[in-house]
Image (cartoon, rainbow, N blue to C red; front, side, top):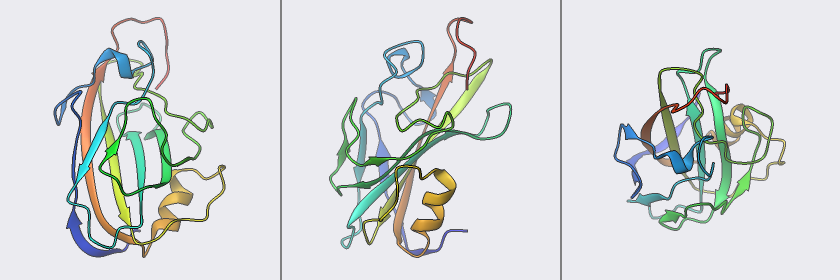
Length: 159
């Protein structure tokens, strides 16, 4: 369970898609499989770093983790096709962004952003659960952006 020091809500959006709107093909397994730009505003004053978790709670075998990253400098943008922090293990045990790739139907992809009061000393083997434990007691604020995706073809069957 996460302990939030201050109940600050970050403003999180993307110029590529609207909240609860479809994620463009470019950012999926059927496109370039690169991350979209994520814009973050209203950071708490004492923010020392940001963390990001992208997951899909609609995955058939439970929540699938697409991206884990921490020690992102507290700027206002995670640029398209970038990894400004340290990437941990996603659900495929890879240290990288894995774009949406649902086996069927519409899935919801949650970009969780955390403003932290410290940088985290974690290994690249860190996964979502280990990152959440490490953030406990350091969270100044949180924000979330949700996008949807439905696979356009049936050539790749992943999460």
